[in-house]
Length: 257
Image (cartoon, rainbow, N blue to C red; front, side, top):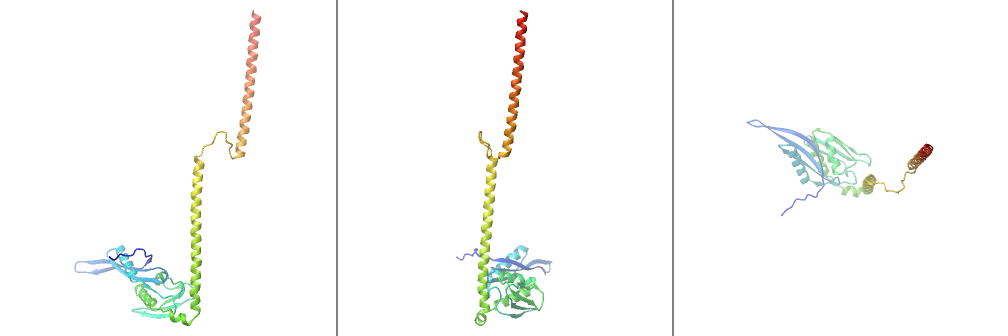
């Protein structure tokens, strides 16, 4: 029996969202349509248009269609292999490769497709309509028509782009690994400090043990010693006074006899 694979990891974005009304004999029938693009940022990208009675239903249908329509695009490093001009219905686009560091220069309706395909440097110019659905399908046709074999045979610069892309990916992985390790160390340190603080709060002072804070405890000791001396002096004075009273009483009794 066929089992659906759920271990695939694709990012998806919604390009356009519309409310569609169908007029019938009874009343208007309202529905929603959503254009969704999904890709893995490594050369695979797909486009799907979903319709449904609810917004969530339309987006889910669109994402399912996009995953079914997923195709592998031939790229050279982080850009497209060659320039292409294509017309699809009212849309007309020009796609050109760009130097490293240029970035993605295009309209917002097309940017999500290029980013999810894994293209980092490219020029895209709109010569026709601004309608996002037509431009999206036109761009998908352009990307599917790209061929990298001929370009790699002719130009050595494009071969260097592949090597630079690999080096950049390695550096990026190293940075991500370092960031993960640093975050894990910080988390462990926070947990350890919390545990130590809790243990310190729970611990009780032991009798006869010397405290660690020497300055504060020495002051307390000196004050206690002074108070004990004062108490001793007071006791001695009281004893002397009591003894004198006893002696005077005894002498008075003797005189009376």
